[in-house]
Image 1: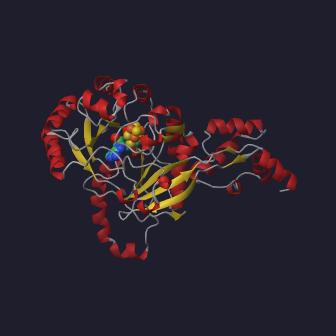
Image 2: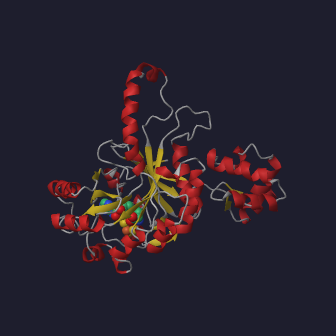
Length: 414
Ligand code: SAH
Ligand code: SF4
């Protein structure tokens, strides 16, 4: 590249290609007087091959790559800038966007097969398959030793952020303390997944001639409220299905944003839904989730009833157990009355602590009594195993921990 070109590049605004849909890429190629199949080639390189620089798109002629670069186009994948690793194998990444804003993304290899750790429904359905597979693997253990698999886990779940910070202000959640800084774009949401998959050299799908495609589940349960960034969230889902990660392996969690739920009900391609209920009546919910004043529990349940559930699909209600606040058996009975008759299950999450927060973890005995009461009413209830608590990667602890005192986490350069 000439010096003049290099200087003019500095003046051209960077435009990320990662995040553009096939239609948008087709428009771009048309503007550059290229054939439409060039858009399909670029789309494949971005989402299926997950290339990281324009030079790697070898299906495009050099002069087209140069034109794109001269116009300021870059791949524009967000970058993993810090990592922390938990004793349970969970990894938390600080991921930086082009403007310097950062979010956290979490990698959770292997569920535990008993208590559900990753919050996704896909994980639970897989449990059965896994038992079968384990038997088979035991039979083939000698062959497995000779050919170690490319993806050394049974599955892995990526917890994805949808906003920088969050506006919802739930009192028990550390992300809320950040306030909302901005929405993430579709490319930045899907880009977290691409960056993490690249880091672990994960091969998806069988289209690369890969005999053991990795099982990746996604949970949109990181920083932010996906349904307050609805258009970008759902556009990201569409991009992610191209990688390919099927939407049946994705679960999105909302604090109960009604307009988002009503839009979601109309989608043909959509993840499964989890709803952070967290209380059994409006009074308690208002005190811990002020959003209840805008949309109360009755309105929330009414909106959920508009979602046409698919075969073997249910709605997950998340219920963060806060000692002395929402964890009594009376609360459990109220919860049963609220959801009975719905095709749903309850995920109980023991509150993960954060500094200067006026809550405490309920005793183990209260947690299991609460679970038993719900199960006795015929409603499935699971206690979610916290993942990565020691590195502040568990639910509600994502706070861009770069701001935490260093002794809390072990941070290593990416
Ligand atoms: N904003 C979305 C998704 C991210 S939060 C939502 O609220 O649903 C994912 C889950 O973590 C939610 O169910 C939330 O209630 C829960 N959570 C938040 N803070 C927590 C904490 N400190 N301990 C345990 N769970 C928490
Ligand atoms: Fe936002 Fe979810 Fe945290 Fe509530 S629990 S503040 S909605 S991230």
